[in-house]
Image (cartoon, helix red, strand yellow):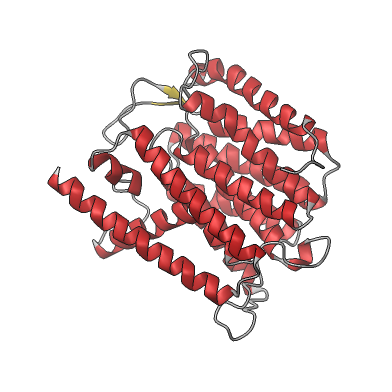
Length: 352
């Protein structure tokens, strides 16, 4: 991201992730860690669910070899390992919601209580002074972790989409960390982004030498946890070396915009229709693009383009030190445009 950052850590994370993808493929077949086609999953053939395991493994190796890790970074690796393991079990055995939530709660607790890391200050969201939640921020952080994991899980509906959204979020955080002089945050966020590249090569079948893999719940849980952890470090001044906020809390919304917008929209619609807000279906934004006549590659390009534009807006607003309330109003305006887009796509889907 900057000239001061060595290329070696990037080479390590790319190599480690690629090796894990190669080595885990026969293991996944052996233990039946495979995503098989069904009514809701319309891919061809059984695909190994090892993307999340490989991405986490590659990032962990790169982090351990690239720097002397602070306590909160070591705790993150422990928590992420637990989350990936829970996700792997869910991928194989389809765990109940209760068991999955308990596992996620325990893994998140390692970060929150082990490193005393939680979101307590939301900034001056309403123009009336900073919103300081105090100890209630612990509950808010648990909800943020669950929301992020759910959002990235829901967006994982077509090839390349989850990985691309992760890359955009991680690189945006890394860029802001670089612009504001936080080397450790820049390093980890950048490595997390690059760790997704070998996965995307396989997931999108870019080369005939890359065998197709999926992220699985292990991957969406890992990406969600990593994003929330990085944003918590960046938005809470007590966790930065300069005791200043690197990323305004409201800027976080811009950096994860498409996954969050999709999750909120679909959960609200399910609730209005009397359905379980967490029940799976094929009514996400990417599904409606495809029903409206766009192919998967076009849908991927459009949604990634939107995510990049929104992230860039967030970065610019952050660097201009735009008041939090103004940034929030602009984000709500962007969400209104998103909802209008959804309405148009639904209309076209019905007509087709």
